[in-house]
Image 1 (tube, rainbow, N blue to C red):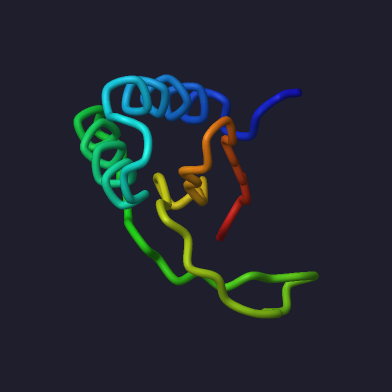
Image 2: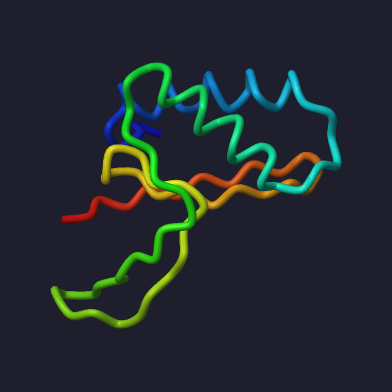
Length: 94
């Protein structure tokens, strides 16, 4: 499967696993989000936390959702701390 914005996506995945391996399992997801934010910002990426984003269908707003991380205003992320579960959502905004 080809990832949208593969250059940024692959960077996020690498840093995600670095954080996951460095922090103990079972912490509140905010710890993981904050650590990942630090990692990505150190690379020069723009990261927004807990951002309310409009969800559109055929150019019409159908609702809103708060995403854990928004990276470079391109990739929206929901982080889960459930063991053995990684969720990635990629939505092009704009």
